Amino acid sequence: MTNGIKDGFYNEITPGGFGLAIKAGKVLFSEQSPFQKVEVFETDSMLGRVLTLDDLMMTTEGDEFHYHEMIAHIPMMHHKNPKSVLVIGGGDGGTVREVLKHKTVERVVLCEIDGMVIDACKKFLPTISCELDNPKVEILVQDAIEYIKNKKNEFDIVLIDSTDPMGPGEGLFTEEFYTNVKNSLKPDGIVCAQSESPFVNKEEIKKMYNLLKKVFPICSTFTSNIPTYPGGYWAWAFCSESVEPLSYFADNRYDDIKKSCKIYNKEYHNARFALPNYLKELL
Amino acid sequence: MTNGIKDGFYNEITPGGFGLAIKAGKVLFSEQSPFQKVEVFETDSMLGRVLTLDDLMMTTEGDEFHYHEMIAHIPMMHHKNPKSVLVIGGGDGGTVREVLKHKTVERVVLCEIDGMVIDACKKFLPTISCELDNPKVEILVQDAIEYIKNKKNEFDIVLIDSTDPMGPGEGLFTEEFYTNVKNSLKPDGIVCAQSESPFVNKEEIKKMYNLLKKVFPICSTFTSNIPTYPGGYWAWAFCSESVEPLSYFADNRYDDIKKSCKIYNKEYHNARFALPNYLKELL
Image 1 (tube, each protein chain N blue to C red):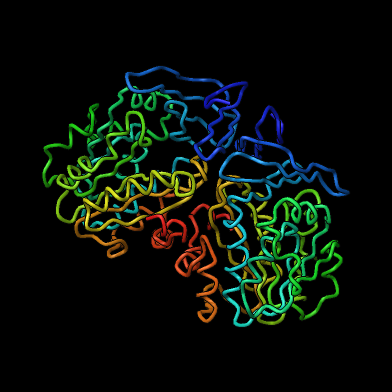
Image 2 (image 1 turned 90 degrees about the vertical axis):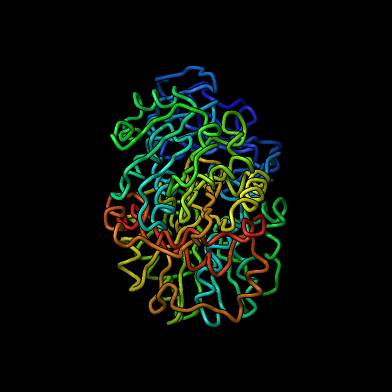
């Protein structure tokens, strides 16, 4: 079985030898960009419409909040006054939507290498991409590796909402890139990067955190459930030069954020850094 | 696509319209018991051998600890001196194995309706069933609904390690059954029952907790990741007449338990009762 849609089912078998099966409906969009195959299909399941890139699950209307609330609010709520935010990748717009729930934010730069992802999501996934036209958002269809090179002391928060460490996302998992990201941050800045499945992608996680720890004096990990990602369980790196995990919580912004979220709340936030033994040993 | 093995893949589409795909190898056991189809097959995946009942995922060698460590240690570590434990269902033996890690335990009753499950697991899943011959274990191949009826003040801990609320497990989700379970407990006893997928089985969860709350003055919920269960995320009910969640932690037994677990540790334990907003609203 190859990944992708066949005989009415989308299948995705991850390197662990198991994975996802979804009853697939009509394919709404399927094109090859200069970087990858971009596909959106309907389902008659609770997942609603689904976005895949190169036949790998990116997001679904039905479960996207599991990912986007975590990558945005966990780091954002650690910052006293986040004004300037960079999102790398994240062309579906879900992370940008969550970031803009924080009223302190004045500017969000979305740096996505593949314009086709943005266009397809604007057209077919409006509940996810709905804030991409917000005047606070600056969209750059550009390679983030180049964009970040000369940025100094510019961002409060950088969110690396990338694909896996193969294909177009590969260069976003290097020491050089992480060093440039660190330089782009203000002194109290925080980086949050998606860091794969703790259960399925053990080797990738190990490699990634070894690099991050070379660059950032503070490098921690949090995890949460993602129903449609390998193992149903995902990790994010939390890195900073000065902000320790759970050292600060923006109580003044909490009510706004909580009431608009399907998952995120303060107890859930605090619980995220408690890791299973097997993951602690890996890191 | 129907659930089960076809063309070299095990597929299980849950009521949410999405689910699991596993590369399946040799079928080691496949028979119809008086209650259900019992099947064990090999995989060449990180999941190892897999047990299914009526083509629904029960456990795998590769990820079973995600479930068994939670259902056993979360309630057990809330008890000062658990000596007498009842496991309902759980014929694979994984829950019994975890319970016996607590040196206070003198007696474990396993009440499993289907002897074929026990026999198949003893033969084909030895890493899971390995403690079923321990002299502290009393195995009853019997309907737990009948067994529990006349038990009074007998158990410190009751673990309901059942199948879903359809088929042979159905009667384990009723007010009468829960009342009998409560009566079987000592005053400081604790019940832990698997309570389905918070993301996929919302209606079942609501119904189950409505019944539990009628019976138990204290009824709480904890959750954790299960890679091979619907949505990769599972809930358990924590019920008692007198023990509040996180009101006690058995520090004197902690070192033994932690060092033998792949997931369970104290921080992870404490974090488990922090629930997503959508689940809090449901309960």
